Image 1 (cartoon, rainbow, N blue to C red):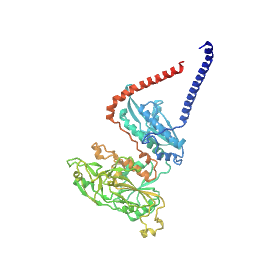
Image 2: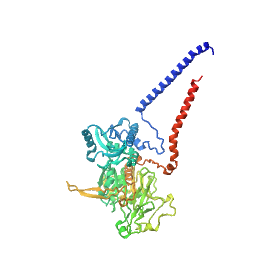
Image 3: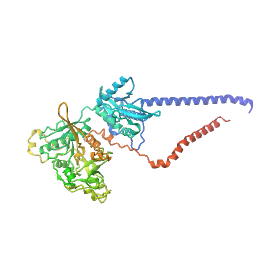
Image 4: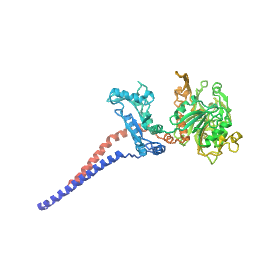
Length: 604
């Protein structure tokens, strides 16, 4: 190439180089500006996509409905979460999960929900102590958690306050405990709370929504526990009442033939009456239902003297008639005076037998159905449960809620019950010829919904027709719900009593073991068996009373897939080698590609 041509190409090359440089800097500027804009926009908008099969990172429909309804959040809800500052990485992950969940809440509630994180362990010692006392409120507020963990090769201890205070309409309404506290001087070890953290993460949506619901509740519906016919007393149901007390007003109700006895009551629970109800009481309950009241019946069709069974090894049963059975029949639900027996059952302690533990077919571990009341619950413990059948009626929606397993059947009417029954079936009992057949399932709890026709239609007596105050309704004017469980004791608790030192009035408290989740006799023998009675009762009351916002959350299934230890052992070496070599190989490949591009770009 001549010198003249080379001199002509130099300006052209400089121009091309300048153009390439301008393009590169322009492109870089656009990328940087774009990234800055994306970060600015993302700081104001929150959106994530849930790609999991069980939708564990998505809000339940009940949560969305509650947060979107402006009547629920009349004013701004402010949550102050006291979980921040210097803490182990696991707890920081939990703290971030709370923030993410609240950001999702704000997607639907807007500025009606505000939250802030505070470190309760900053400031002077006096300031910290004052704040801690304010949070603790003599055990009525947040409970602190002491935690031991490894830091910089040495063991450290920290006090955390894993909870929040909810302020609504300028008032601190309630405290939210995300994780259980610890007794003083008995700290948790970090290695031992992994499962606790996972459970809290799974329940986070329910904990937050139920706490917000409690803080913003304007008018609480009132639920009456019927008394006067031998029903379970207040001390016997104190644990169940405590579960629903934050959301519903509870009171004892005695009718005694008074037409206004159920005025101001939205729901009525009848738990285990032992004597027949007078016709007038039944009439008042019937009319209460037709006006839109909600009814929950926990009934025993048979009397079984369990003391005689334990001392003699067998006992007879007798029929128990309360009059409710006939009325419920007209609402589409039939209670049979038999027992359901099921191979899926809890054991019974029999000290005098060769085997101290026998499978007790009468203590059923009821199988939850797909209905929101029971979906994804632990088995519900039902002792001596009666079968429920449906009376087909197009006017009512009838749904099974709890059933027995496919390996189950029923006894005869008013049967003889013997502790020797399990010995007749061997170690793998088959109670029916085809124990896998779905048709063997028996209904143990059922729901009826609709506008009801009065049980007293065409048979009302003169005491009611001649009384102008009765205002008899032959058919329902509002939709209502009736729940029937063929067992009255599934919410019953044992209790202690002690006199109040000031007033001398007796006070009652349930025993330490939560009988809605565990059996005391099996717990003493260290047999791990957990029941879903507590969650089932809460779901049942919420659904029947129309408070469905938290039912969807409780029944939400999050699958925690266990690792296959056998595969881990077999393939551990391969994956370790892959983790060590793959990054280096990728770096070398990337370096070769870049070198090749540079040679092609700058070579003549």
